[in-house]
Amino acid sequence: MQSILLVDDEEHFRSRLARALVNRGYTVLQAANVDEALEKIRENRPAWVLVDLKMPGKSGLDLLREARELQPGLKIVVLTGYGSIATATEAVKLGAHYYLPKPVDVDDILSAFEKGATATEAGEKQEFEAPSLARAEWEHIQRVLNDCDNNITAAAQRLGIHRRTLQRKLYKYAPKK
Image (tube, rainbow, N blue to C red; front, side):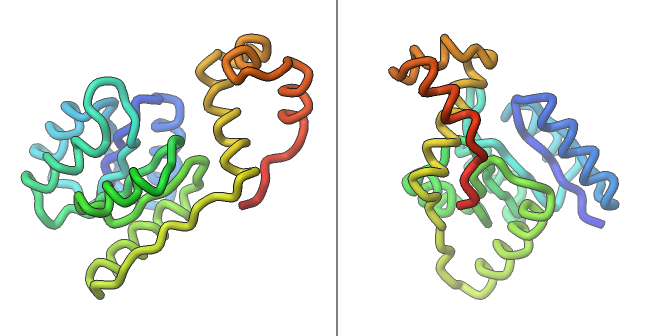
């Protein structure tokens, strides 16, 4: 099986994803930041890298640039909770095989590595499917709520909405697309 390097500053997310990939038979390496990831790439030469776009210090785009110099054939998928068409385009220009918005599951990630490799080898254009307005709003609320340590009042203040309005929005299920 392939070796995969997971680069994400959120340890809980990274460890859960690593466990799921190990259960599927992959060799998994982990890094919390770009510098640590570059060191792991030099030492272990993984086949695939899954990198979070937004991290403290250097970003996932910085890793894309530097990792391509170290290991030109490396397949890199960019994962982010702050998805936009501009960052997706930039990531693909820098050599990312695919770009995934969070939340995502293991099957989506593995599929992205396969799709990215196929599309890149065939020279096809990769299409970025923009989330619906409802989905983008839901994800933004979740990010702000997470940044506020799940404090509804603080998140509502940051979002500029009433606390009860935020509670009603959180009570609804996340949109499918």
